[in-house]
Image (cartoon, rainbow, N blue to C red; front, side):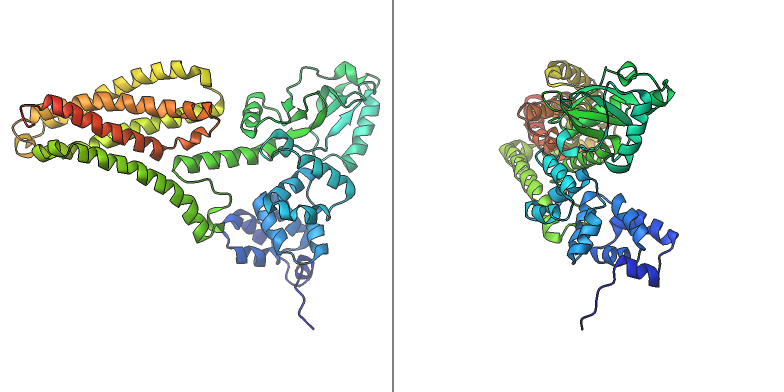
Length: 452
């Protein structure tokens, strides 16, 4: 007879985990290896295992579901999830697992999940919950409270507000629980409901939704279709995970890495190699233009080797100024502080800032050369001409960096591409090439007849 695998319930009777063990596991879950997660999860009593399972993100829940071998065992865990969470689970597991997961849930939940899967996972329709508190406008407050009590036992996932709808399910208003309990029992719901409502279209992107939540300071928002029919609600918890995911992807792109769909330790060597290698190849090819630019000015470099002393300074200054501008504009676009039509205002501001910063850095470079104690022995007798070359180069390359870094996100946004792709390494590569051209062009003019 083959040995049966212990379930969390069996382990609970033989070696129950302490509360400290549970808290430690919950906080360190992301750092555990795949094998350790499976082993430690099976040591938890059922109640604590359920609590941990519901606290995990969709990726980790999917990982555990795949580990369960029996159909009944999978069903017991999937049925703990709300319809929107089941939809997220299916999207995480992939299309091949859709029918298997849908067959594990009851018919009503299956219909709700199927409806949610019709929407893109990063839009309001894919994030919303279809279970919310509903009221009719002609109800008395006393009837509404009794009806809400019934709903809370069966078909409401979370209760923040009650939504008032007509017979066609069109959203008419919203009632907060404070207003409902403070009102007279015989008052009609339509008399106390708020009709000035912030509504979320089903096709709205999660970044825009997150921005609305931060501006409105509300715990939940209604989701409607094009005809004003209410489809569900979005809670702050639903959006928080999506906002964190978007922010993580943006940060990874800033560093020149393809966005990771899983925690760092959950990615295999080849997955990490592929996601990092693609960007590195692109940046490496871009860096080849720097080599081409240097070789183009080979004659100047041979005649005045001293020019190479300042190459790192010039390249770093242009790249850093471009990366600064790019980061600021990408974030401003994400927060809605800057719009596409503001590009002209941005470029005017960045030109002035770039000139001021270029003047500052150029002056520092000028003083650095002129005041250096061993300037003649290190830079030669024509050190003053070299100082002027560095000054004017920085005065040109820093504004160029700020303009390039600030405008590239606008260009990508215009063509419906992710502005975060204008990452710091990408901007730096673009600015480096032009920085060399500017540096040697100015050097050729200033040092003509002197060193060149």
